[in-house]
Length: 177
Length: 304
Image 1 (cartoon, each protein chain N blue to C red):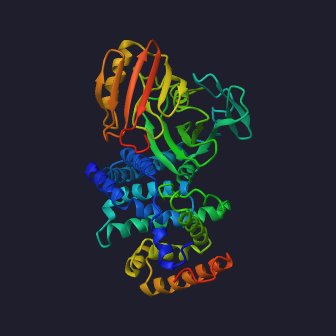
Image 2: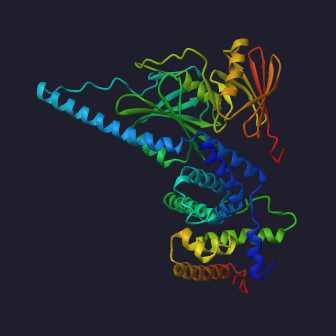
Image 3: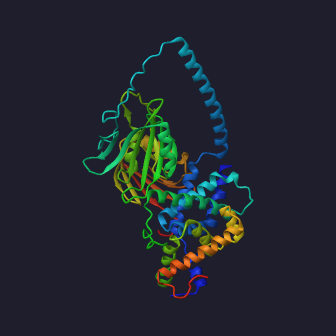
């Protein structure tokens, strides 16, 4: 019984690790916390596996666990007042082929930094929609929102991101549609 | 610089971690899951505990009522334990305590950096500490001198990677909390301290046989009476105080019967090689006189 659950969760890990890792990275902006929360996401999935009722897909369920963890982490950081926007952006994952893609690296670092400046709700919808390519319905399930709220929040989030890009002086032309 | 929005989102979609990171997190999850209690049994255990706790409470209240009816009130005697440097001792000679306010600070030799803390906490405080930290290991250490509950916190500090917490019941209301910082102290040192702890006025349990523990998140068992001589990621050398041919053979048997599904791959009289259940870790253990050497390799890791 326990072994079945273990195998199941480790299988999900192989399948969805990259998605969960990227989601948490873009939500928190630092790699160390990312590692911890990826761990916590799959451990919680293991502990709650009997509550998973197949009403949503596995990926959606894992994202919703990860969402709770990142929101908690963001709250903790606010309380502790140690959240520094410049903390560790230089430390992006190294499997990204940096030597061949210096330009790409700059884009990732800049957007990672800019996304961190958004409100947590905006960060959530942008990361899920534009980076994780979730459908509006899936995002609504993950965040427990209505689909209308997802669309409205996404629209406002994109507007905010454009403003931030504009303020950075890097976007004469609009970078994001 | 690429400027089209879709191109830029495509780039962000390519961000992934390294294979080594993925491997390390997988190992950590695997170990946490191995140590997690069975869900089904915990639900039933929880129900039984609730029922049992209710019965005990009724019994206690009944006792109080009988006592109040039959006896005059008496003043409570002071608790016998006083938190100071004389409260406890252990065989980890180079680590000593100094009183600072309401707690004891632990120092190693004459280094100025604190390596740990000892304090008295209530049940509620203990629970708050456990709930508020990022604890990845939660286990009761069997056959230790006192009932000892160990937790390991993943700490993100320059000089601390893990913080070990040990809670020992001192009185009905109070717990003694020991915390130690790794790598300021090695795993072996921390566990040696706790396995040889003697609290003044509290009789320790003496286990008739050797004690073994895992280090940090690992699943390999180590004897508790090791003193580190040399530690690196690939090799660890210890002085093993209790070493003997029989102790070594007993230890090797214990490795394959313990957690982690370790299997013996090869061996002769002094050197043995084991592979972990998930085949991600190979350890060669060699005993020479009282020197115990561990050599680690990770066959499935891409950064080898």
